[in-house]
Amino acid sequence: MTAELIERLSRLLRAQSHAAGLNPVQWEALRYLARCNRFSNTAGALARYLHTTKGTVSQTLNALERKRLIARKADPVSGRIIRLTLTRVGRALMARDPMLQLASAAEKLAPAQRAAVTDGLAALLAYLQRANGLRPFGVCRTCRHFRADASAGGPHWCALLDHPLNESDAGAICVDHQPRAA
Amino acid sequence: MTAELIERLSRLLRAQSHAAGLNPVQWEALRYLARCNRFSNTAGALARYLHTTKGTVSQTLNALERKRLIARKADPVSGRIIRLTLTRVGRALMARDPMLQLASAAEKLAPAQRAAVTDGLAALLAYLQRANGLRPFGVCRTCRHFRADASAGGPHWCALLDHPLNESDAGAICVDHQPRAA
DNA sequence: TCCGTTTGTATCGAGTCGATACTATCAGCC
DNA sequence: GGCTGATAGTATCGACTCGATACAAACGGA
Image 1 (cartoon, rainbow over the protein chains, first blue to last red):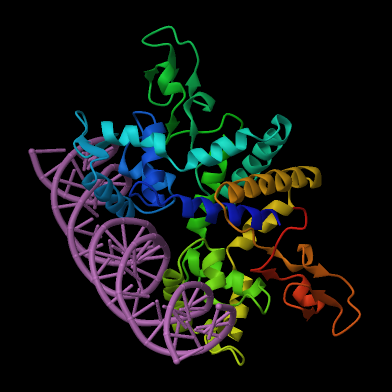
Image 2 (cartoon, each protein chain N blue to C red; image 1 turned 135 degrees about the vertical axis):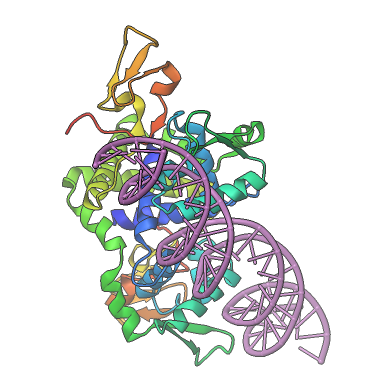
């Protein structure tokens, strides 16, 4: 029953995600690039996030680039990394994200019910990720390597990359995220 | 947050649904045909179920027919209706449905939590269906036109089609389903 | 009988998707 | 310095999705 509801909801969301000339995957890619941190805006990271291959992602990026919604820029340091950024148009388009309808619907639930749904879905997701050996992406602030209020360089610190983090970084999605509890 | 979890879960499920040489939509179609009643096994009903067009569904059915998983049979009564049935192979394949993994994961949740998740998701789905003017498919037994324990013809009765229903019908998905409460 | 509706299909163009193959860059190591 | 292997990204192929459009056939009511 629970599985069927998730299936129905997915299908409905997917049908709604043919808006503004984009298709569902293109919206997902755009959403990711709008929410990921500056260490995770690459084709490889996006491929892992979407549970697909680099080849497939490369084509989706071609489509988004043709539509002038994203830009590819070579990394100044590493010669084989290509950084992805939203263009001004791409950023503006996020206001029309079909997923916003679901988000606003979820806010109409009673707080207790919403919390229960969130907890249950998080448990399901964690279970499936573990069962399939997948790395669970997450927000920087909740990561094992996150150090709040570092003294040097910035307000926070990433112990994995040895790099300062600002407030905006702390709330963004990171490829290298690892949940705090083992 | 809730919306993001649903998005993550959808994506994961979708990635898992490239199994046994089928793609996600083909699995959805197969699932529908395995679960719908004998008044709803048509291309048009499937199109409405999947929130897509008849043209798209027709192609998916072509693919499934090529793979010998479904069969198209002309309706004996109406000359323009084509009934869809699973072949023996198609039915056997349902045992490998990738969605079963989610179903079994859901069963591992504590009963109270599972009930809360189910209720919350049902509310979300109902809200979105209403907001987008979509007809909510459902199981025969829960329909406004369902009459339990009819005296004539069969154990139950459909007041819309004026037709007897057996136990198997009562548990199947129907295109003409209408929720009991107005 | 005519006309509008319903059921299903064919075709087109853009794009997804996995698989495979490829290039370029980097990092460690001798 | 040079080798080797891992990593980041792209190109191409074939099967397929998907909406849009157009179409044929069957039905059904006026």
